[in-house]
Amino acid sequence: MASKAAPSCRLVFCLLISAAALRPGLGLYTVNSAYGDNIIMPCRLDVPQNLMFGKWKYEKPDGSPVFIAFRSSTKKSVQYDDVPEYKNRLSLSENYTLSISNAKISDEKRFVCMLVTEDNVFEAPTVVKVFKQPSKPEIVSKAPFLETEKLKKLGECISKDSYPDGNITWYRNGKVLQPLEEAVVIIFKKQMDPVTQLYTMTSSLEYKTTKADIQMPFTCSVTYYGPSGQKTVYSEQAIFDIYYPTEQVTIQVLPPKNAIKEGDNITLKCLGNGNPPPEEFLFYLPGQPEGIRSSNTYTLTDVRRNATGDYKCSLIDKKSMIASTAITVHYLDLSLNPSGEVTKQIGDALPVSCTISASRNATVVWMKDNVRLRSSPSFSSLHYQDAGNYVCETALQEVEGLKKRESLTLIVEGNKIYEYHFKFFFENLISGFFYDLGSTSYFNCNDIVGKPQIKMTKKTDPSGLSKTIICHVEGFPKPAIQWTITGSGSVINQTEESPYINGRYYSKIIISPEENVTLTCTAENQLERTVNSLNVSAISIPEHDEADEISDENKEKVNDQAKLIVGIVVGLLLAALVAGVVYWLYMKKSKTASKHVNKDLGNLEENKKLEENNHKTEA
Image (spheres, rainbow, N blue to C red):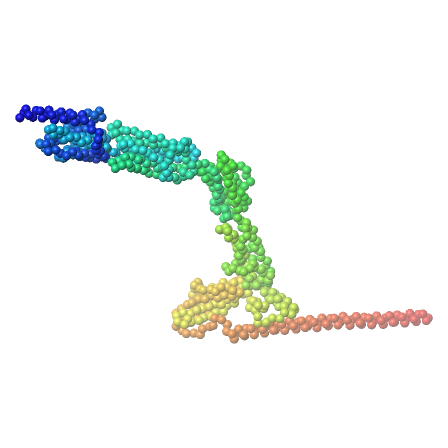
């Protein structure tokens, strides 16, 4: 039995040696594996019936074999050879499929599956390819800025741990950058780690930028081969600050130059369109040939109208690059004559002028007692109603806040009122001007009185819960009204007053007295103080209400009285006029008679002298 086994073993050994020496070049099978994954290599041979064992080997670069795994078909046992790089990494299945865990670059070899029978050895080679995806490319060593028309290193694109090595490509705004002399310079290099056998690829880019590259994104990519074919990975975008020289200078004025007025502060701001912008400039003021060196701003404080003119600024190192602007300092002057408080007599003339001087056409508005007038006031003959507070106000609409106002407080006093009205009456009478005796437009008897006149009325509310007491006052200047309760002397402050118009106004109070009271109304101005009282019954006692205004019958009586007074005055004046005419005629007649008597006496004396002369001649 032993003698038969010996020849068989010798045959198998010879077959293995022969198989190891054979290197068939056809029918190679390739297994692609990712770095770190499991490499799975099927045997790809049909298992023969008389199989003795299966075995796996790999070939060194010089062609010598290295056996790594053995499996017996009879004992069903697996043995792994003592190969350090594959220790604890191999697994051989029953169908002779070999698995290698944690694939490495060094696993990239030619492996052979061997099935051995008593009389033959069958082999199936497998080529293993290992791929490692590189890291995402990154642009490093980036330039802080790029300058136009200068070739400068933009940065480096780096991608690490690749197998096999890959290629790096640069892009500008998504388009591939190709090398261009003196404009685009690309230098590529790769380096392999001796331990991991992985590649690091680096590509540097030198680039001559232009203003067109402002805000343009630059990227790079790495192209590599993987188990499933070629792939490309892109970097993040990189945008570079582009430096370029100033080509134009502009000047700004703050606040906006159409709104500058006297007293404002002006800030001149000079700007250059370069990057980075210039930090210093020369500022030229009107009439000054030499520039003032300053930062990009220059401030003038509390400007006057003489600051109007052309302002300029330029670069310090290039004075020919200059910008200018015209500035107008707006002004507004107002002169009111007369102004302040002015006291005049009724009938006086008062010329009023409001003179405006401005940098532009200004609007003028006249106000009297906060009411806008349609035209400028003019007083050829003052009346009581002309008194008041006059304001001349002007403004430049285009310039916010530029307005002026002056005021005139006109007081018209009535101590010469008799002289004024009778003078007016005589002038109209002599000129033959007749008018309605009841009209107050030309002769109002009430105007003769400047001291305060008081009339008090009372009225019970329809609800019976309160009473309204009104004190009507006439007078000029405007009298001040004060209410008191007789007995207690208390002053009533909560009153309601009407507007003061044509020397008249009223003050009203509403009370609910629980007992009979006496209310006193006091009106006082510069001429006199007038007091009037009114008894008011308790709210529970009904009483007769007094009308607020004069009745038509009373008005008629007043008008009749006025007409009677005026008639008497006119009659007296006419009588005086007639007497004057009679006296004038009498005087004229007396002078004529005297002349005639003197003439007759003269003739008698002449005749007497002639007779005496005749008698002498005869003698």
